[in-house]
Each structure stands twice: as C-alpha cells, then as structure tokens.
Length: 284
Image (cartoon, rainbow, N blue to C red; front, side, top):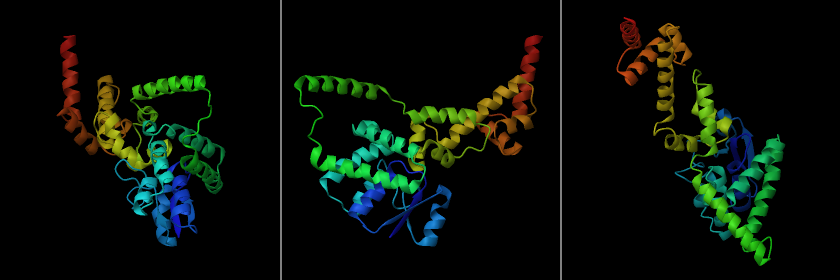
C-alpha cells in the first residue's frame, strides 16, 4: 500500500513509516510531497494520507499519529508501547512526558538538517527507530556506568534537569511564534504556513495556541494585535484611515471598520475625531 504525507519529515513522519513497515505492511511505500499537494496526490495515486490535518491517520486529542496507528492496528508489543510516549513527546514538544523525548527530537532535527533528500532521510531515520526499539525491548534497565558514585552524580543531575524542565512553562515554539506574528502582523498570516515554518503539526498548533496567547484563538489574537497597532497609528496622526487599514493587514476598509468597532465600540472615524477633540481640548 502507498502512504503519503508532508515533505521534510522529523519525528512522526519517520516514526510512522518505521512502525507501518515493521508491524502493519512490510511492502508499504512512502511518498513525501508539499503539504498543499498531499490530498490531491493521495486521491490520484490511491495512497493513504497521514500526519496532516483532517484525515484518519493524524493527531487525535493529545496523541500523535504514531499513537493512532498503534491503536488502529491493536499493536500490543511492549517495546512499541514504551516507545509511544517518547515519540509523542518529541513530536508535540512535550518533552516532560518521556525523558528520552528531547534526545529523540535533537537527533531527528539534526539528521533532517544534514540530510536534504527526504527519502535518504527516511532511510537513515529508520535506523534510529531500529535502535530505539532494541533499547526499549532489551536495554531499558542497562546503565551507561555501573559505578555507584557515578550513579549518585547522574541521579542528582537528572533531578536538577527535571526541576528546570518543570519550571519552564513556555515552549520554545511559543516565543518563536510571537516573533513571527510581530514581524508579519501586516501580512496575510496563515496558521498552516506558520506551522510549516515552525515544523509543528497544524492540528497541534491550533489546539495549543490559546493556552499561550491569552485564551484567544489564532484569528482573534491576530485581530486584537492589529487593532492595537491601528490605535497606535491613529494616535500618531500621520496616516489616513485607509492607510491604517492597509498597514495593519486588513483586506479592505469595511473589514477594518467592522473589526475596529467590535474591539473599541466605535467606528475608526469616530474614534479619530474624538481623539482629535481630546487633543484640542488639552491644548486649550
């Protein structure tokens, strides 16, 4: 069977092919294409799309596609079940749910950076999951060192790392996303495009967004920032309302007026006039 997904894989889009090849379909063929072409190509070549929004084989709730395949095909292998939270943690940027998740992410990101061909990347990535499976099946209780003093040092170090991780409430992608939004607030921002630049699953990003952005959806947060910027430009007094609408990324004047009134209770023209009167009164 053919399986198709987004190009430039990191975690799920390599882990899932490994899982499918080893536990679902040994003859499976995997195809990587630009995100916008996945569904069209899938229909044309009769392939199963995976790890994209709004398809069966994708993220569901807090689980990643790797989890879904395990549940779908009722895979009960103990080593696979041990790998699942590691893959999930690395793929969803929740490194707290498995101590190995951050290492898997680091290795996968570095491998993708060094390997530009997706199919060579898949070939190399398969070796990572072969190794992870062997560890999960045979080596989980093995330690790098057997010296008791070294063990004590490692335990103290791990406790320190875990404490630091617990204190870190804001994921790195949130900081990066805030910078992207600030830099491109006047452009036609798309959650799908942003998720590609951050290399985060769009469904996960959509679901997690409000937790880190004032309990607002992506669209509402963007509109809030644009109105705040519009107010600053109106107060500056150097721009017409048409220019303000353009500089804050609104598609047309009527859309700008409607959203502005929703946020301030006033039309932009009324707000501008009242501001001018207030300034004149202050001077008087």
